[in-house]
Image 1 (tube, rainbow, N blue to C red):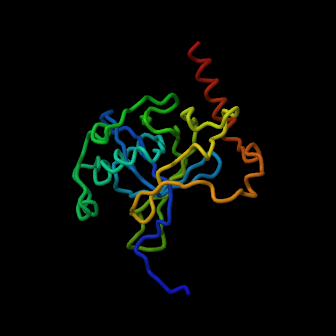
Image 2 (tube, rainbow, N blue to C red; image 1 turned 180 degrees about the horizontal axis):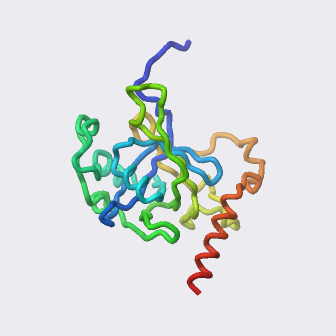
Image 3 (cartoon, rainbow, N blue to C red; image 1 turned 90 degrees about the vertical axis):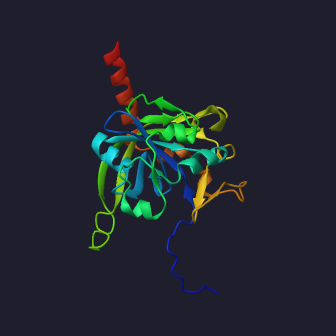
Length: 230
């Protein structure tokens, strides 16, 4: 029997993502989030309007999305209550956050330069995506108390970096879900994926049929950059 319930949060399980950005002084910022989804080569994130990551992203117009595997849970946990914002926003003060300007060092992770964006990649993450800002807007615009506090931000992926350990044998442009073990956040706790429970009907559809023009556009951008360097 189902009962009417009013959970304070509705985090039923999403991947943990480390967002890499650059601060105004050129130093790196790194922050974990789990409010994200993808459609093709577009990602939509939900994030506080007052976080340092948001300020950096809106100013620079770019960021990286880095997906840790379950083996990096300790590094993610070390970032959990840190913020690059100084002073610490009031809402984060109430939750025990503290200012940490050296996020990569605090987490024990390694920044690596992106090739198409200036924001840092996380070398240890099996998946890293370079992205450009498309549009940002407020969540809950109709509510005067909530308007402007949380943003939904659309990002265009312009390059994907995959560790060879998770690439499907013989298919360089496919992730093998039997090899990829993402870190999952469910109701503020960390989990990983188990084994596949059943064959999927959707899995019979070739992945190439989901390709969007963004992929070809990204490839053309890479060629243009290469030509300018010659």
